[in-house]
Length: 107
Image (cartoon, rainbow, N blue to C red; front, side, top):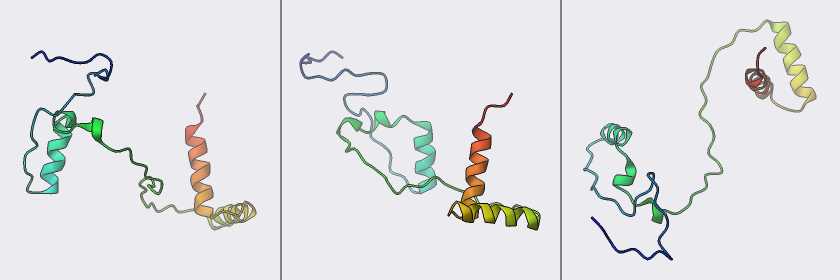
């Protein structure tokens, strides 16, 4: 289907963007049904994202999972002393050390 477009003001459309939605999303009876639908369908077929406002989420934190870690008492005490010296919670220090070590390239 050919349409007339003004070259001066029309943004270039890529395979990831569409000029307008072409389909109507179904009515969902549950969040699980909606989640399954959007996992299997491209939202650009249903939503015109070119008019969506830009959003900032400054307080969004990465998801975490609680774990149980058994450490020798002496090791934990040394970690707490080091954390106190750095003026930070010992759990944060452990996380920083783990992230640093996991991020390093291995020989």
